[in-house]
Length: 410
Ligand code: C2E
Ligand code: CA
Ligand code: CA
View 1 (cartoon, rainbow, N blue to C red):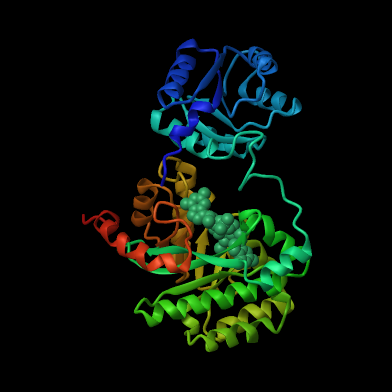
View 2: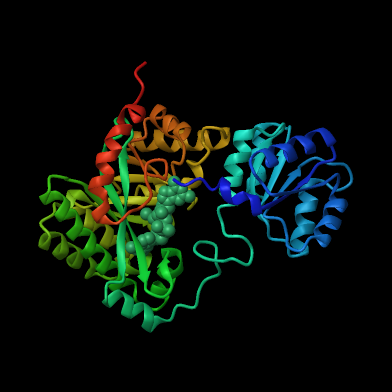
């Protein structure tokens, strides 16, 4: 992965803390990591004043949670009222549970971190928060929903400008590639590569999701069959939108493509989000049961975000629990995430479900998943989604990482 640090020289951070020692420590770390402009304020009102003097809001705000007069939360609320939308990190020396809980505050609060701020934590935060384009330089993720019109999208589906890329799914014990997840990408000659967050919702709204999904499934199965003919037998996971579950013909359509490409149904997993799964009733429920009867795998995607009970989920014959990345990323250093992750994995094991962790970005989180007995994992630590033609070469290079990835012997 290319290092983003070289681009931080044009980025700005505002540090707000009444303790001069802590404030200067954070400011020095920011500068040492290459942030171009660091502004300091000793209390909330001074911060608001500084902000009114700046040409553009800072790219990141690092604020002490406890301060006399205006505390960190009051300041965050005041910033909201003034329309400042920069990401915020809150610092505190209180207990981990309290620090973790600030992440649920919303209002742009990305992280709660322990004082004194550690260099590695700051680097992670800068990578996460400064990865997005600078204000006024919008492109890719984070840009406002674009105005994609139905005819253009339909044309893109028909002409196969929408193609699947494939993210490796890795065995957590051995590091070996077991399968992939197909993720749709739109290669638009004018806009460049448009991410799915921008067009899936439009496709769902404009009744194009059926055509889009069948096209992605067809291309993904064809790719899987091609790899197989070259000696790479992999599993293939595809995403299924809730709208599709109300179509009784979906099972026959997917089965026809699976047979046409000579794949075994056990190689294929259909990913359905947790909220869709819980809400499925009647015809939608029947579609899921029929897929299982045909031998396809069923995965609960984004597990942990739907607030479902196990009783609700046990109605549906799932084979896999896919844990949302919000419980995986950073779990090695956040106790509350670790506890949720471990208990979800424990529960899945008892129910005989395979487990997939998504969003693994670091070796530390990878090791944690190994120690918790998670079956497989996906994430940028292993690889981003790539075109199908690139996967064999990627896998060859990946072989060199297997000694590092293997479960360490005790
Ligand atoms: P998802 O199913 O939860 O897919 C995982 C998303 O997380 C992908 O984003 C993937 O690129 C991203 N990701 C993977 N590893 C990491 C990591 O380590 N860190 C971080 N921060 N992100 C990671 P992508 O490709 O932008 O897809 C977004 C969503 O769009 C998908 O979320 C899925 O819900 C939807 N989607 C994608 N393709 C299709 C499709 O063919 N049909 C339908 N219905 N939905 C799709
Ligand atoms: Ca998915
Ligand atoms: Ca997911």
